[in-house]
Every structure is written in C-alpha cells, then in structure tokens.
Image (cartoon, rainbow, N blue to C red):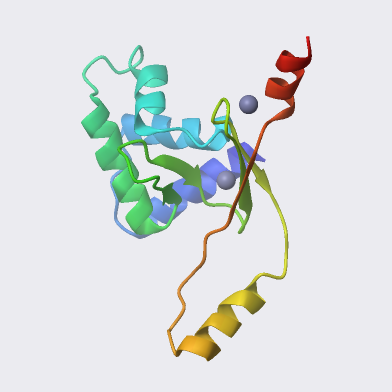
Length: 145
Ligand SMILES: [Zn+2]
Ligand SMILES: [Zn+2]
C-alpha cells in the first residue's frame, strides 16, 4: 500500500516537473510511512543521519513544494509547529491534549455544512477544518496506573 502511494506521489511530482532529489524521495517516504503528522523538525531529526547537509529549512522548503503540488496538507496551529499530512482521502483528526498525538478518522457528511455556509453567507467555500480534542488511550492508561 505505501509502496504504491510513494510511486503515485513520485509520478505526480514528475508530471508537474518537480525534480526528484534523494532528499525529496526520503521526505516523501517518511511522510507516507510514519502517518503521524510530523513537523518539519520531526522529519529533519529522523533524516539528518542520512543527509548530513540537510537543514530544517531544506525540509521545510521541500514540504512547501509538496504542498503546492497538492501532495501534503499543512496543518497550522498559530505557532511555528506546523504539522504535515500526506494527502490520501479526506479525513478528520482527533488530537490528544496531553501528548499531542494526532490520529486520523473518517466521518462522512460534513459537506452539508459547507453547502449551508455557502448558502447562508454567499461565500465561495473552499474547505473546512474540524478537529476533535481529548486524551488518547495511552495517556489515560498512564494516569490510571
Ligand atoms: Zn496522549
Ligand atoms: Zn491526517
């Protein structure tokens, strides 16, 4: 599955004329395999051993390229710690307020909210964002013991 996603992502880059450097390849691979919505810093830390000349800024620039092509979504939180999500299908996130873990889940039907918002306000709606907050099972178990 992830092999297939990686191949498709690389095809998308080729089609849009983006050069596939070893770093870009590694960053994509990390995004697809980790599925943990990493920050640029997380990616940098896990790849710096492999690419000693790479900086956080390089990682960030590559992520911006992926974002422009539509391969990743940037989830901003009003500080510098943007998290990056490899775009698969539309999904929502549930976020642990204790450890920051972010987990995907699927829930259909909220397109209606977009339609209603467009209808009521006259806006051309582009997208919406919904996040669920709470405590992950790992953190609540730690408290119990
Ligand atoms: Zn947690
Ligand atoms: Zn996600």
